[in-house]
Every structure is written in C-alpha cells, then in structure tokens.
Length: 329
Image (tube, rainbow, N blue to C red; front, side, top):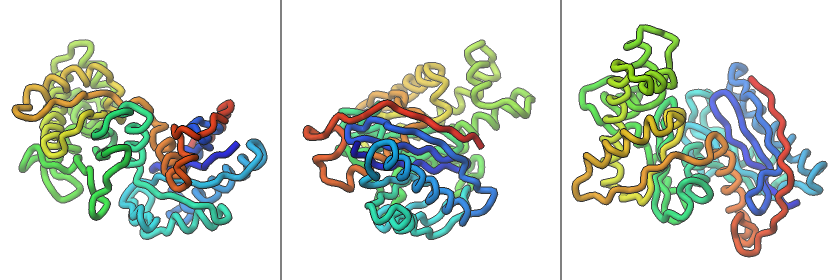
C-alpha cells in the first residue's frame, strides 16, 4: 500500500499516522516528546518515531513510505525546512527537514507550522471543505489562525500570517507575553477563560470546561466570565473578517468543545458587530486533535505527483483497517 508518514509534534506529545493515497489512516500511534530531557532529546525522539513508522510500513504495508510530513509548533521556516524556535520545546534553528530525510533514507519531507497544517486539513477535508476562502482559529492555550485560500494556507511574507491572537482588542488591558496589552488570546483563549473562572469562582482548580458547565447551569458569575470572552473573541473575529473576507470561520481548540454554549452567543455577537461586511458561516472544527496529523499527511502528498494526492481522480483506494498504538506520557 502506497503511503506517507505524518507527524504532529506538540509541547508534550506527538501524534503520528501512516496515510494512504486516498487519505485513509492505515496506522496511528502516539508518543511523549520527552521535553524534560532537553531539546536535542526531543529532536531525536521525533527522528526515532519516524523511523519506527517507516519500519512498520515496510513490515505491515509491504513498502516504505514515499514521503513524510511533520507539523511543529513555534516559528517555522517551511520553505527551508527549519524549525526556527519553539518555546515549549526549547529548540532553535533545527534543520528538521534535512534530519528527517536523512533518517528516512532520503525520502522527501515537508515541514509545516502546527496551526497552519491543522488548518490545511480542516480546509480540504474537514469543516471548510468546499470553501474557497476560510479562516481556521483554534482556541487553546493561546489563539492562532490559518488563512485558507483555494486549498492552500497563506503563510505570509515572513511566515507569521494568521496570528490573530495578538490583535489588540482591549487597548491598555492585560499584559501579553508578546509585549502588548489587551491581546485577544489573553481574553478569549481556553487558558484565559480558565484563569478568569478560577478567580471568579474562588476555585484554583477550575478550568474553562468547568466554566462552560456553570454557564449551562445558569450561574451568573460564569455567564459574566463567558460573555467577556465571547465579546472579545467577536471583536477579534470582526477585525479578521473585515480584512480577509472569509467564506467560513472554523473555530476549534479546547474552548470549542463547549459546542453551542460557545457558538450560539458567538454567532450573535459577531452578527451584532458587522455593518457592511458579509457575515461568514461560523462552524466548529470537524477533525479534533487529528487535524495536525492529517494536515502533515497532506503536506507529504503535496510533495509528490498530484496524481497520487488524496482525492485526485487517479488516486487509489487502498486504505485498509486502521491500527493504533498509544504510549501515554
């Protein structure tokens, strides 16, 4: 079975898959990054994991992977294959593409930014499928974004496009690690809601999911915290849609797991704020935490002849039974 290796590297764990020519998941696995052992050990863990996946393909699928894709956090120079900087992993200027290709006996390797890679998957095969212009925004520890244009993700001139989390929505507000005050991610990320609800509830262990449950039960303090986050998010989204005019806004990440508790007031808040702008569809992400891995697979297929790309007319249909292996951190 012809396939590629896909790796999604996070701050604490890695998700991986072997993906067939039709986009089918042939094998899935997870590993801890082992970041407590230092950045060099993390890189070695990634290389070892990729080599294990290659061996699995040879033994169980009858041939080696024809390409590989890897999504990493932080600042990424995708064109030159360099993982420039990741605060959570402690690395700087890692030639990830070259190192992976060498470990995999010279197969082509694509490197991508984790959020943009997840956005690629959501745009092509997830919630944005069929939309010529979309914006993917995961609400997690921070807030980032991926700008989708005709099936590809716009990285910007320097690789920084889509950083909606650092739009200032409350001038002079809460300090942000970027050096500004009142950034969107300091008010509307899952971590921001967690912090605000822990303070409002007096429970230091309370998190954003607890806040959402309290909102659903009618708690007025929770509703105030939640509405503050929704209002800030709506302000940021209206700025984004004014600039980009997307057809679809895809909201993912931990906060989106609240479902309609988030989407009902968010859609109303955005609609209240638009004037001349065209209101886009605001939809939840469809792929969950598999988006980055699936996107890495798409990047890998994109390196090869388009006739072998998932969804192309001449693609095969050799997706077999998905197997899984998980090692928890």
